[in-house]
Image 1 (cartoon, rainbow, N blue to C red):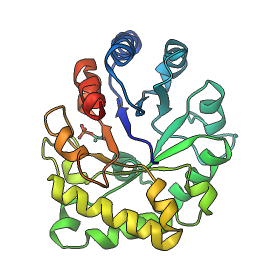
Image 2: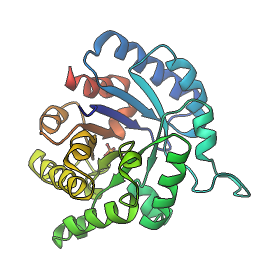
Image 3: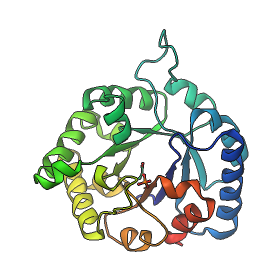
Length: 254
Ligand code: PEP
């Protein structure tokens, strides 16, 4: 059975003390209010990560992740953070391929394939983001775009390594815009992604892959989105900065 996951992406928000405050509220609410088997993940800025891992000790349903990692193991890359460093402080996940990294930092499918390999070699679980822009949707190219992001970014992996990934479908036109994909639009793409995984690997691998939806997800629209058969949770940006909203989204699976 695939895991239901709700992951927060704080992006470049919250200073150190604010982050600790929001996270303390989240873990207390998750402890008291969340049942079932799902996992809540917070992907914080690097600055917070070690302290949040310490705070989360003893809360089995809460894990931590980074928002990026370098493709090299180590070396002369001033200002960068390696997968090994992230793993060494006890984080479990790393977001790779977020559309903001693709757009503002020029990250290509080819680079992301390398980042994925390095993250997996260091026992981090990538939350691998794919999704089309508004232009690509309007030009009816979205199936091709999503397929090429999968083929070029992660389909070089063998089944054992691929099984460690979480896939996040994030239509770029829905990120931070307040415009959510309808549950039908999201389900259509999630089913397509699962079919592509089944064709490449096997139905079993596809059935076991957690596929998250991301893009203006909030406590109001999450129940309908998460009720779709191929949507296994969400990657949450803006709403993960408010502890109450984030936990209400996590509770959708109760
Ligand atoms: C994101 O950036 O991953 C995201 C889904 O953002 P938002 O929820 O704010 O649209």
